[in-house]
Image (tube, rainbow over all chains, first blue to last red; front, side):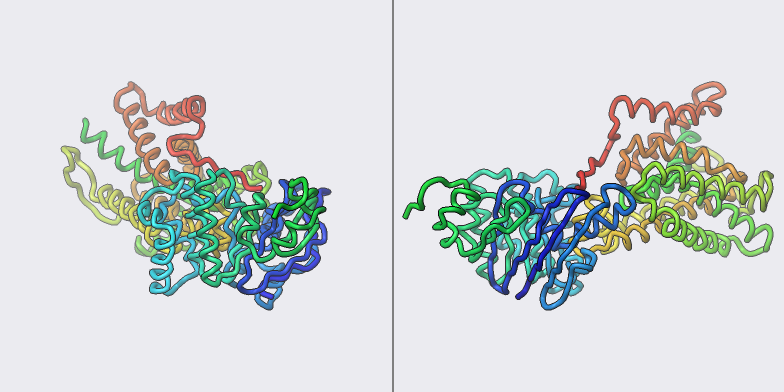
Amino acid sequence: MLLAVKNLTVCYDTAMLLNDVSLNVATGELVGVVGPNGAGKTTLLRTIAGLVRWERECKRGTKAGNITIDGEIHFDGQRIDKLPPDEIARRGLVLCPERRRPFRELSVLDNLRAGAYLVKDHRVFQQSLESVYTMFPILKARAGQVSGTLSGGEQQMLAIARALMTQPKLLCIDEPSTGLSPKIRAELFAKIREIAKSGLTVLLVEQDVSLAFSLSTRNYILSHSKVMAEGTSDELMKDEKVRQSYLGLAGPASA
Amino acid sequence: MLGNLLVSTLMSASVYAMLAVGFSLTFGVARIINLAHTAFYMVASYIIFTATMKMGLPLYVGVVAAVSLVVLLAMVTYKVLVDPMREHETTVLILTIGVALVLQELMFLWFGGYFRSVPTAVEGFTTLLGVRVSYQYVLTICVLIVTLALVWLLLMKTRLGLAIRATAQDREIANVMGMSDSRTATITVGIAAALAAIAGAIVAPLFIIEPRIWLSPLTVVLAISVLGGLGSLKGSILGAVIIALSENLVVFLVPQGAFFKGAFSLLIMIVVLLIRPEGLYGVAFEEER
């Protein structure tokens, strides 16, 4: 297993955001995590990336810092749940965050450089820069532009490209489709499929179930802070209870 | 008179910019408002004074000693006192103003409230834009501008600079990209202190040294940060130029204007807060959950 999350429970003060969540991602898989708003999907990725623990460290001594994290996270054979986020990044796990969050006042190229912060070899940097430019030609055209002025779709491409620049072993993408037009969504998901085809392992959190299922090899359904179901897209689409309760699809599966 | 105005504006603008850039960087990266910032500038002047007048060392030794000791002092203060309190914003304000007052009282204790001065590095005068200025004055302006240019290069062209700029934009995501925010913050605090120390060291021969010289630059730096937008580099430099120019205009144009110049920068601050609270290049920090 490249990533193994074991019995993860996260509480912010008295609110339980993740309740005994276990999840596995094998090398080469594209695993989807779907579920309604507020199910804990973003918290799951933030915990894996070390940000929840970091947040607790930052806010220690205040009420907002009253966060408990239980359970274990293993990545690439090592336990990472006690590591700071920059160390987790160094091991090859990268998060492409919710709401894209480019470094808004930095140029597109500087954003990509920031992604490659841990890459010391200039040739490797040049190669990965070329490969993200090939994948997203618009970024090359906008290289000098301040990233805050890009459109939503372009910012999402930049966020994914920036994550790829870190040379990750596992790419965690949080809600890439939010706020994008159907056309841009389709384009973006074609790129994510391309990334997965190239052999990179992807953990994709997505609210749009049909989009997620169209890509993923396996899925977890997260609802009310718990894993409610697990399986391939086909299996889950056929499961009557899953369809009604978590996917918001009434009626039997159409062929 | 225009020459006079320009030369003295250039001088105050570069001193203010040195102080404001450090103050702003500290806010952007370490997320603290360091009211002890200009006290470091005052301490640097006293170290120069001790090195040159008390110990008889050459000026450049004093400058090196001042910068390194002040950087050390700032980093230790940050790690030991400020960092553990970081999330309590009001406490940080009280704490840093407390640090400034302690430093001020220590200087009173050790050096008394006398007006001190230190020797200049170079003697003589030249004429610049029709104004008679000392070589020391010219040297000071040059050093300040070169230092600012070096800081600009550091921020724009180096890996560390990239980490500082990225962290100032989004601390959380910078971490995800492998930039340790606590390390970047400590280094930034050091750089900010170095800038304050260089400013203090380099202008010491031109100004009078006494334990309260930190107070009026602090109000000016606050005014600049509000005007330029807290956390913005461009804003700090542009704000420094605007405040320096308006201060000097007041001094030159208004009778008895020298008494008003401090009040005038505060007036600018109040007007900006009323009209455009985020300042010229205000950074709207994304809410971190």
